[in-house]
Image 1 (cartoon, one colour):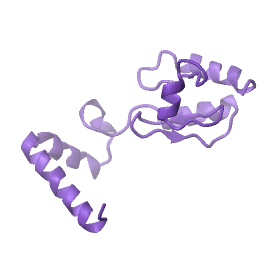
Image 2: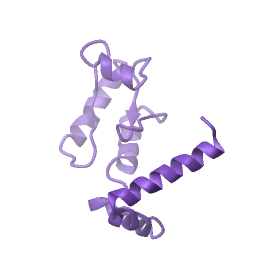
Image 3: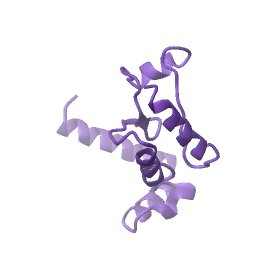
Image 4: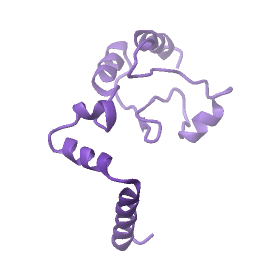
Length: 124
C-alpha cells in the first residue's frame, strides 16, 4: 500500500485538470468508510474504475506506466446521448438518436415491455 501511494499521487496529479476523467483516492479507514462499504472495498489498496453506477475492479499492473496507459485508454467519455453521441459507432448512434426523440410515455412503455419480457425469460 505504501509503495503504491507515490505512484498513485503522480497519476492523480497528471489527471487533476482533466474534464473527462477523475483519479482520486479515498481513505477507507476514516471519513471515506461509507463510500468504501457502498462499493465493496474489503482490502487495501483497492482500485476501482468506471461510472459510479457500475464500478469495476482494476486488475492491471501497479506501475505508473501501467496506470497511465490504462487511464489514457479506458477513462473518459464514452458513447452516449448528448455531447458524447459522436463517440458512438455507426450501429449504436441511430439507436440512441431514436430513443432521445421518443416521448417520456413511449420510453416508459418500452421499459415496461422490456421488464416484462425479461421476467418471462428469467422469473425473479
